[in-house]
Length: 350
Image 1 (tube, helix red, strand yellow):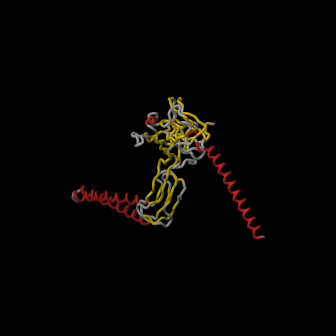
Image 2 (spheres, rainbow, N blue to C red):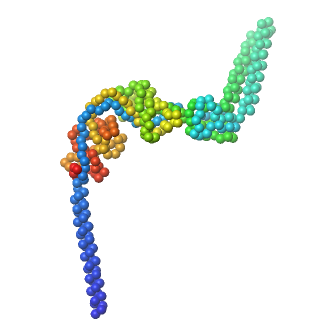
Image 3 (tube, rainbow, N blue to C red):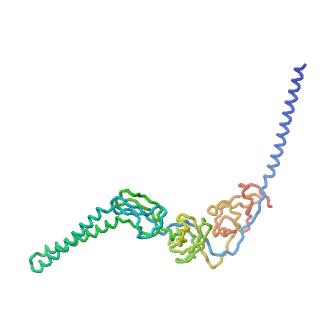
């Protein structure tokens, strides 16, 4: 009897658990169905591209490059005795960087100087003898050639001696050093990379319409994206005579750095070209752009469904972008709520 009671209790418990699980499953299915219904229409805010007057002023982006940069190579042979400048040091043109052992060079210089002095004395004696027809013209010419040869050897010895004192060829900053005290130099040994960032070049690309608005020597406002967007004054130094494959023209702008060289080569910068004129343009809220300005898209709404469309942009302002292609005037475009959208999804307007 007890065994029968235990069996009945177990059956009742199993039935209760099965009922509870079935009920929970039904409730979850109902909730999922409600969520599915709600997710069929994503709430968004719409706007549209409108024709308006736009200032012809425009911006262009690029990277800063040094006006001067070079790799300093050894012109002499010998062991390094002193290294006076290290990585990160500022240098001025003509400032001593490295002293190379010069005993051999000095000995060669003394010898060359003595040979030159002797050749000059021999020439003076031969000229006196030639005045009395005591020697031939050929002998006199040989004496003169000897003087010229000795002078050339002296100049070479002086140059070799001078090369033991390695000096900076330009103003700048030591970006890299490849030598140490005790290193043995040969002609062509790499010693330093020197970069002059007192002035930099900002290389930007502009369209065929924009390049016609730029003149060589024109003053341009420049900002660096890093460093709090401090403003600098630039000057257009070169304009490409031919476009690249994308119909863009290279423009070079020279920018004076600050006293503490805030600008660094490789930084990203923006040039603002001010033009006192206006033109017609199709403008759209910048909030509508999906992705970056370099690869922009927008969601266009048609029949209450959202469709992702590539667009081509022109001038970019703080809150608007110029649409060159991809959207027609009057088309409905999603301004906010894009984060929840996908191709062809149903939307509803807030």
